[in-house]
Image 1 (cartoon, helix red, strand yellow):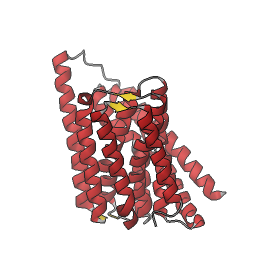
Image 2 (spheres, helix red, strand yellow):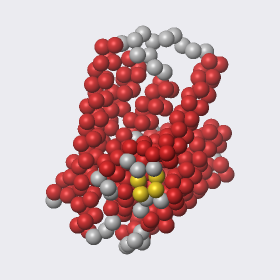
Image 3 (cartoon, one colour):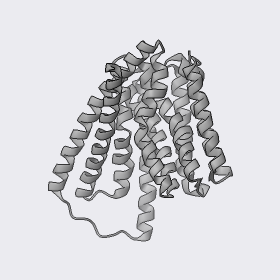
Image 4 (tube, one colour):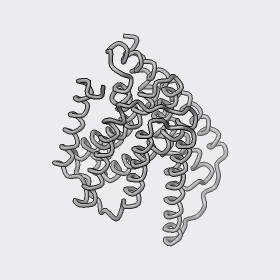
Length: 315
């Protein structure tokens, strides 16, 4: 019962804290006139990834590398197979390949970097720095490209700064950070206790319970987007989240506390992540999106993967 309460309480605090943090960060950016593009790329991108980041950092410092790395790899697998699977079944995801070519290339590069990092077996400060620099390069490139587009279309009037509003939103951001830190500690403690109680490795718990738990905000956002027939928003959310997970979360975690990768992740899970990424890119380039049948196949693949882990396939 205590383990269950820790898991549930940790997930609730992560969800609430992440929501408050994003609202505060975006509000602060708007208060001082920062462009919506920059706040979206940096503040919202990092803000929505805060639950995963704090969870992986906490797990690494508690010497639970299976949760730290499994959280990232498992979240990316769940984002594609589970979240896009559910989203595409509700409303097919159809986009012109040219619209998301840049982001698909970034996703492919990030995923390749994640494979190399996991196969290396040990992600140290320098490897983490390389991952973070790749993320910074992606953000800068995307920002400059959109700024050129804004300049071509004509910029609007600059917004007046609201310093009082900024102070309120900074306080919200700090509260959000505090809640996510507390939630991550509870979640990791509960996950470790659950692994010990069930007699399974913390890697399996990190790949499933923790990964899906920290991805719940993305799942809810994507389902809502699909119901409103904005499945392109769901696709962008997943692509951005996966890029941040590998380059940002894994990179920052390794810079703060070097990670020794559990060998079972290198044997199976990283390849599942790579295969899911390749399948997504292939469907988007050749078919122009995810139809219901392909989305259902993603869902069935995720059920099979989790079932394999539950039967001890990762051992």
